[in-house]
Image (tube, rainbow, N blue to C red; front, top):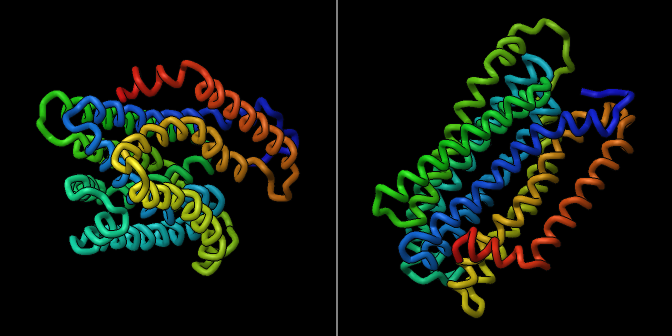
Length: 336
């Protein structure tokens, strides 16, 4: 989708459903952290939840940019089928990595020997990782189809899918909170998996009409090879691995620092707050891909809008960090 007369208003209308989608996803972390903080042994379970989530993030990192790839490349039947097959293989690979991490002696070596987790926290983390096994594959599945929706200007459907994810997550978490005796980290991981699997299924159902048109398309398109897909996708995957790899790295050093257990318990709460503001920037990536233009004719307008987002999120986060709102958030909302 390009326009030679692109305005900030048009960008805002296109971006708003995507921003709403990411903002809704960002609510997930604070909500689950607040639930876990109000259950038994909150320090141990929050620490385990933060470590398990860090593992899940680094495993999903290679697939998370598939939305950008499908937004940019899924132009017709041939490109759609090849990109879909590429996604399935990548999904299988990252799920295999998750399985390797769950081999007991591998997991114990990483969590106990490297990160220096107490044995009890390591066992809680392992439970969460088992439940999060479908997480990376479901992320890849739904982000591939969401990219197809975005390319075909169906950004509202992406937001609807996220609403389904949030509802599934919240219902699962609240039911488990009130009617089970499970560990808090188990409740959090189960809610995460239920939410993302529901969203993946909803995305597939909502993209059905678009896929049918792509499969029946007779328009000529440039041939797309797997070499071209890899060449296009490799920098995107590397970017997400470097970005998301920061959290496991921080987890490793915190695990060997002063007051490690308390610090690990606080990390997911801090991360989930920061992610609310990061989500607005993350949601803008597909907007830039879609609207910048084949010859970058809309670059300056797209860039200027990005600067406005950057300034807004900086001011908003600084307002919380340097005011009594920080105490309200961490104590009253997060339950620390």
